[in-house]
Length: 401
Ligand code: PMP
Ligand code: GLN
Image 1: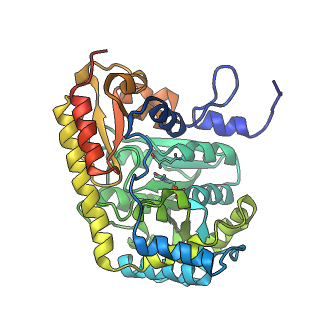
Image 2: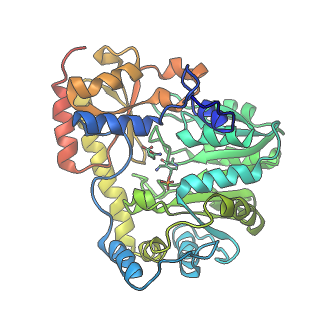
């Protein structure tokens, strides 16, 4: 075995993935997708669709390759995609951006988040406030940056934060308030009061708001409220999104950061040394996607709402207590009525007991806070209707533990 000192340990520990023998284990998504593949179970774990995105977007990527768009893109992104992102922000949110200075194309939201946190955090005394449970990369990137993660709990069943707990988490040490809305893993959409409070606290403590809005077009009872549109927010907000969820193209890994020019340029300064740039032919194709007519974006939300309703009905029929997601791919259930005491163990047994894979919510929570999420499981609705129906039947016929 190699002795491997290095920042990998910070990342692995931050994400709760440092094994007792000192090695790093795969993410819960990698682990559960591998379990689904090896058992043949239906994968309602990792959030990726099982159908392709819109044909004009796929065709535009094929066309870009055929036209020879196969060398490095400019560091910020192709000008046409920068413009398409700016047009999208104007069309849906009324936000005016200078495409050349206030937009940056990244390798998915994941790189955008990593580069943003690394760019903004400067000292081990800096704090990053997140809502917990949270997407797995947040804790890893905050740990890599050397700062402290300050979680604000979201509680079953509505997963809205308590405003007093939020206010006491944000202090003058807070460098970033990181807001994922609609929220993974809980499916919640934050109330206007929560968003207003985030902006008020960011001003009071001179913090920067970083948003993760990858599910922006998956709000069931829309429209989505982008924090950058709230009064006095834009000047201190970096908004992050990605093509993956909106266009059912999670493998294309094309995202973007928008906001004040100096902040975006700071993110670029880090991003250019992480990947330099992502895959060129995807960029013109995503520009086509961002310019699709209104009806496409409306159908993205309404189709996912219908799938979430179908999944919810199936989960209730199988005996789970089921939360009501306001958006995203995800529905959280409490497996306690089915005798579960440990969601992690329950999810590991589920392929054998029911032929279905889900993700334990404890995977998104720091070890000290796991007890209150002990029996909660996340299921993804972003699958074909026949797959969701089959999963519901299998869960209803689950064998006893
Ligand atoms: N943030 C959240 C909340 C996510 O669910 C995901 C995963 N899709 C990402 C970021 C990463 O997005 P991307 O695949 O564009 O890197
Ligand atoms: N965003 C996806 C999810 O939450 C997973 C992406 C990944 O595997 N990193 O399921």
